[in-house]
Image 1: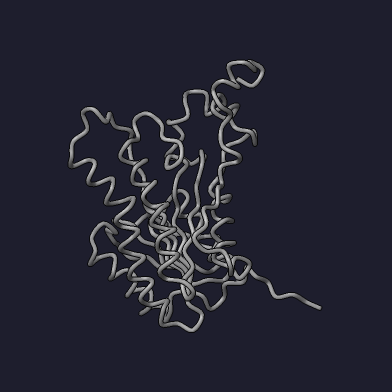
Image 2: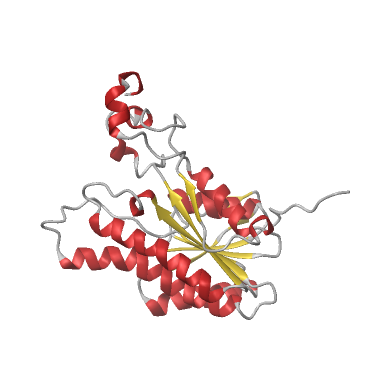
Length: 260
């Protein structure tokens, strides 16, 4: 007996927000490799788009913080592909900021990008998916900051915590046609994050991780493929932790100098 390939996404359409760099780029590339038609977005067109073989992701310039623009992104995907099977809400991020002095405008922008935008894009995607016989899957890319905030991340951590609870709430409302899940990402080695991990290239930080390495974008992409696939057909409202087991507690490192 030959089992079907659960990671075959041919004739499936995928939207990845923030899919032109870093984690989103690799997520989009992985869905292309699995056979899907992929639309990525960012505010400006990049020099290079995700590609696999002779297939390249489509692109739409979009500010997902704008509700009308976010809805137009989903409309564009349906116009291009005739359907929408998977949405990966990946766009997000924030620079560190001192909570004591940060401006209200800064906080509003961080909340808008990391919480309100995923909600708005998901609403439009759900409206399409509910009308399809096979429904669809929505994956929200979160952060370990939602569980374990660090100094300088108050607004970002609050937004990501909201995204996690939003995922669970929408999973209750939009099932069974649409499954919605959350990926908690840990420390990820990307070009844009290189300076965050110190002058030693992240060696000291890596020693705090049980897996002995930081995640790479393909680790997150693999989780997305799983959650969007038939293998996860009964996975809804879940928080999939892709953080290598988290970080050793400070008290453990203090008493085990060989680990630090």
